Length: 256
Image 1 (cartoon, rainbow, N blue to C red):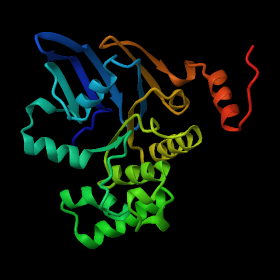
Image 2 (image 1 turned 120 degrees about the vertical axis):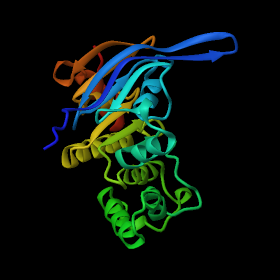
Image 3 (image 1 turned 135 degrees about the vertical axis):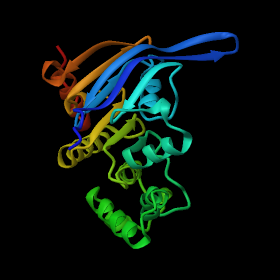
Image 4 (image 1 turned 30 degrees about the horizontal axis):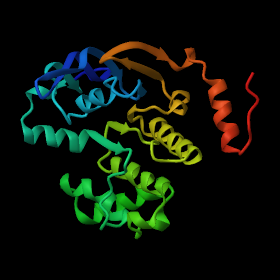
């Protein structure tokens, strides 16, 4: 029986250099990272730190200048375009800050779309899409198009779409960035529920401190390098969370 590695994602000495005219911009400077199956990881850092670039490397959306990225022990650099597209379709679900739903499609059709690419029969993909919309609390809005949905509802459709092909990994790029505090918290709680129920690995690039409270580990990125890795149990964010909770309730907290 083939042994499955405990690590679903591994990066080894990943560098990424962009050319801006004649200037070299070093977005990543030797990132080595192991992510276990079923972990909830938040990648945090200031704008321009390299967290989104690392996110894109893990998702196979961009290639390293040097170094290696492994998904399920498969070196992404060794895959041709078809193989890489197949791995992304079957193994990774994507959630974006701007939702990226198809405007002319209903919620149901948006969720079904990745299944079409994966070759799922029509009846099966319709049934599966309805089950997923039900899971994210939007079964009754299946026939609504994105412009008929609130931001939070659109993000729920995007989460259902990310789960369409039962991926092992969900990559969430600033999933609460365009949402108000209360709706953002609901989306974070939904992602955590899915992480626990399905055992899916969630990797989020985010500025949202509320993410810390549900993450197993937080990867802090600065100047293209990992500055530190912290377990949730060692992070103290209660004060920040209390402030946000108070603001959500329309109260002004007492800050010493």
